[in-house]
Length: 159
Image (cartoon, rainbow, N blue to C red):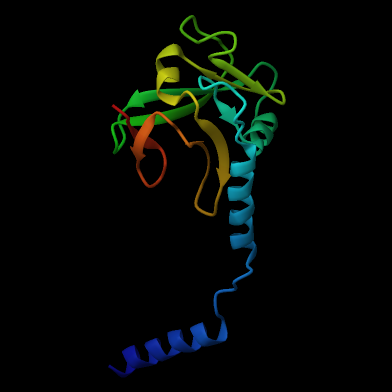
């Protein structure tokens, strides 16, 4: 019991000496990322478009070479019924939407969506998020999604 009491005293002492900094770099980065997502949304673009955040464009320009692009697909699965799948690709398939719908380019970065998946993500925003536990592309603000899981990789569709 004395060891347990000593441990709780030590933890309390550490909390008193090293409180969570309110102006920490982690919190500031999170706030900047949230503000960037809000500013990056493009209301003048069409409803059938995919919007790319600035962080998404930057990351794609860093990792793609030549004719590579990011492919966004929706497939069955995940904890909410459907899940997003991201991959790098170089081939445009016959079922990929061409023209204004299906191939989305912004600042030299390209995202391609097949015709079946586009129905599930039109009007959504693609972002690149970098956190302590993971770095990944994510779909944000999907108007076709009713709800999603806490990690953001799966969603259920509005009926």
